[in-house]
Length: 137
Ligand SMILES: [Zn+2]
Image (cartoon, rainbow, N blue to C red; front, side, top):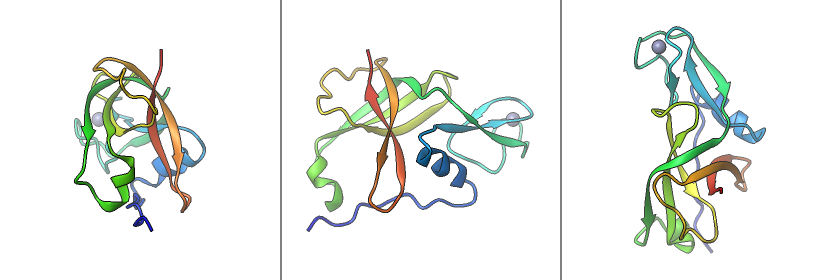
C-alpha cells in the first residue's frame, strides 16, 4: 500500500485559496492599498504593510520561470510519480507573481523556461484540490 500523500492544511489565511481551487478558480491576494499581487498568502502586504488584502481571480495562465525534475529519494508517497517536474510559474498578471506546482503532463520533454502553461486542478481523495500546471501551445 502506498503511504498517504501529505496534503496542505488550510488555515484562516489560506482558506480562500483552497476554497477557490475547489470551485475550479485560481485566486491570489492583492493589496488594496498599493495594488501589488501577493503569493504566498499573508496577513499584511510585504510591500506597504497594509492589511487591506483582498482575494481576486487570476487568469490561470503563465510561463515557466524555473523548474526541477524530481528523482528519488523522495517521500514514499511520491515515489510512484518520479520522475516529475516541479515548476515555478510566473503568472500573466505580474512578472513578480510566482507560484509553485507540479507539471501534470504525461510528456514533460517540451518543458523549458518561458514555456506557456495553464492551471489545472488535481483532486485528492480527501477533498483537497491542488492548483497544478500543464503545458500549452
Ligand atoms: Zn501593499
